[in-house]
Length: 159
Image 1 (cartoon, rainbow, N blue to C red):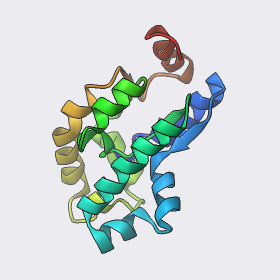
Image 2 (cartoon, rainbow, N blue to C red; image 1 turned 120 degrees about the vertical axis):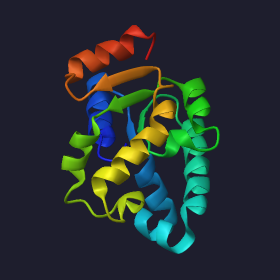
Image 3 (cartoon, one colour; image 1 turned 180 degrees about the vertical axis):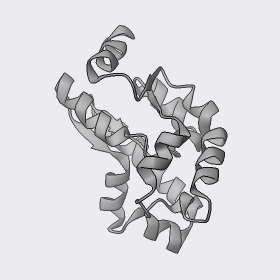
Image 4 (spheres, rainbow, N blue to C red; image 1 turned 90 degrees about the vertical axis):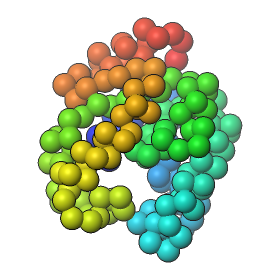
């Protein structure tokens, strides 16, 4: 979900296990030379989801070992979740909607959360995406510390 801390946690995990970290949104912004809100505004969500999928497949195909933070919608479109699961371990950072709302109150660059009721929008988005997220290999909560998350990852097999 937006605001769950995927990029922050991803960087921490990558540093802890000594492998590279990549952020899919950053990869897209660099390739497109414009912000994600701009892509949504000018081209629409369908275009964004297409380049998101292409970028996901490309980065996974190019890199052997990495931690990749993807956007909150990435697992919910095309074959992205199946592709990620076949390519490595997937982690769902499960943060309650109320926690997400607090983190996002001052952030106005989330295209799917622009209109009106942030709490209602987040709740609807969470409900619509949760079944995809729950397909992840590992589910962690905001209460878990980095050490226990890394141990969960290690417990599922080789890194």
